[in-house]
Image (spheres, helix red, strand yellow):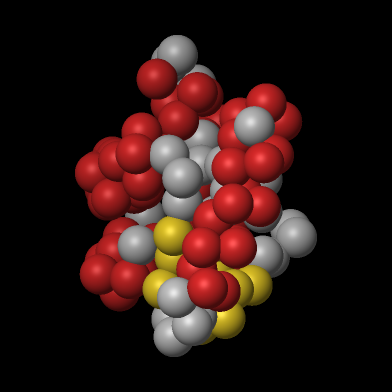
Length: 110
């Protein structure tokens, strides 16, 4: 299986060894791992502190980057929760039905 690694902004900054360990483990299990370098942040920090409109840019970015991924894996339950639970609601909140459809298509693979 080809796994796209979403390392999350705080893990990349504070715990880079977590991402390295994930790659090692996933490859040891026989998977190939790719790391889209253009990834940044899931937008959770923005969304949870009242900057919901600003978070939409990061939400769209995540969906664009990972839309073709076979599977997306991340070392952060809160970031995965943001993607799986908040992304669909945020897209609907801002009336972006196209983005909501793209999120729905991506969710089973995150």
